[in-house]
Image (cartoon, rainbow, N blue to C red; front, side):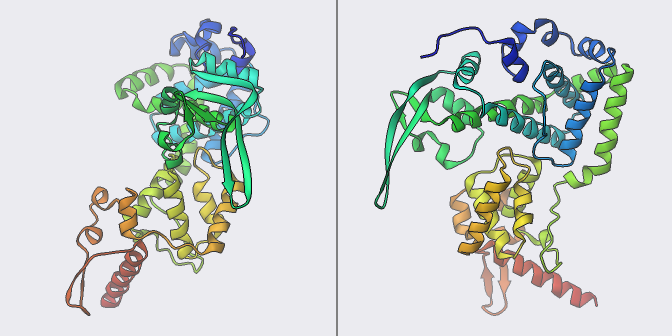
Length: 391
């Protein structure tokens, strides 16, 4: 086992969200936000300003990763300043996207971290993680004639596992579906780092719980700092130019050039809204959306791009999965299945067609919508009938 030693300043520079930031860099992290910003920006720190603006521009342009990101001492100032600006901006879509991009950058650094440093990070976060230099076996997996022995170097106490994974909505992450023994969950390094990524993301998302009055008060104070005012106005101007792209309306066009996104059922609209906001999507939501859009002949690239805003997005992996689903020709879930998966959003959207159905002239009776694809077809019929009546 690794001995319990103090975490290094260099490690905190790379990962300024660690609790030890307040201890090792006390003079920086415990300053009043106004004083911190004044002291920082009055030094004409052009490199920091450039890195800060680059971060926002990358977010606005939906960049998946910032190449050559520097994990130096300036990284601490950047982290704190990002949080201050997001607090006073008070624009949730920007906060979501910044949280996702920052956590992805940290994930890519953490996944390459050595086991010693990774264990020190767990200690600093007060997480009950056990590390084994010699991997321990926890399961024998048999598929047909193939036998695979599953091993790992890590176990995490189920209480900490639940705390870190609570916002991850996949079924396979639930405690009932993970290998556990003596109160500890067996988990891979990649799985642990993914949980850390979610912790980092939540550190930014907690900003959304801000008190609006406090945010406005701090903003008015900060805007008296000339350099901050320039940065704030630059970010706000860029946002005003592209914010329509962040609206939660759905801008998807079919290959044939016909836009039917306005005709989508609420179950689909809800998933697209969550994706556009940069929220986590469950495995079932991802599958259903992929099957649904494939059925309407949407291009693979467009489907992949929808998922690009998600915290755990990997373009190569997602492209493979979307293409695989297309080859298999999977059909989207029925309304009954969607209800069983808790994906039906008819009540949330107060959708009349979903809730009350339609009148079938052929059968001379009221019928319920049973499939999301029929929902689109019926809405198309309504639109075409309305167009014919108006012409």
